Image 1 (cartoon, one colour):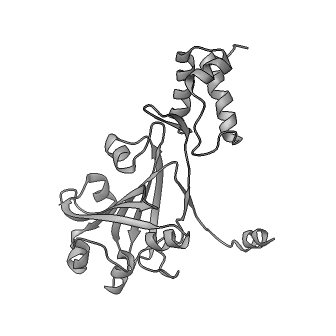
Image 2: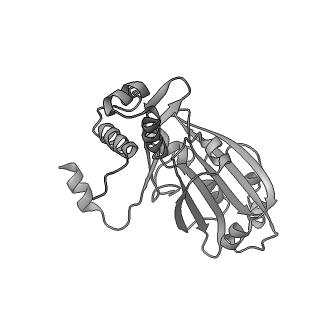
Length: 257
């Protein structure tokens, strides 16, 4: 059996210690010189091992401050209940879910009228060169960038529901607003994918090296046609999604025991 390179042995040992909370989230690792003495390895070997852990998203590095175990305060989103008007909401679905989790929501908005991107036009079943309203949200939980959300509405819907094209928040949430205008979302189709972020995505979400993004595309439908397409981009290290499908009474009973 081939022996692993020394830097991999360093990375493996430190990874185990991070997983076992020898080094806890937010705690600094020993210096490169201390690790060099411990593992009887050169500083370059130690650096290569630490770089491996940075690329995995387990630690972060700061100029002059060494290496620190990343803090992961994960926010769990119930994607089945999100935007479901049968559940009580205080404002939009994002603010409600974050507040109910005991966290503090904050978001900024941008509204644009633009040409519908080809992939979005296909989902909305409109001509590729047609116009759409884009409502873009940059969302935070406890002042930490958590996600971006880009929702595209076809022009025919913006004519029927003009507040979609107005800047700023729609306090009751767009799904509830549209239902009040006679356009009820009766179903949706979800697509979920992961990849590494673009430079712009990494900047907006303040993502360090080695952190992927999760992309959730939800196309919402009225009884007869698509009414919007929402692309939400999450930090992969700070978010988790779940769905509730079917009769889960057995799960609830098990959880209560």
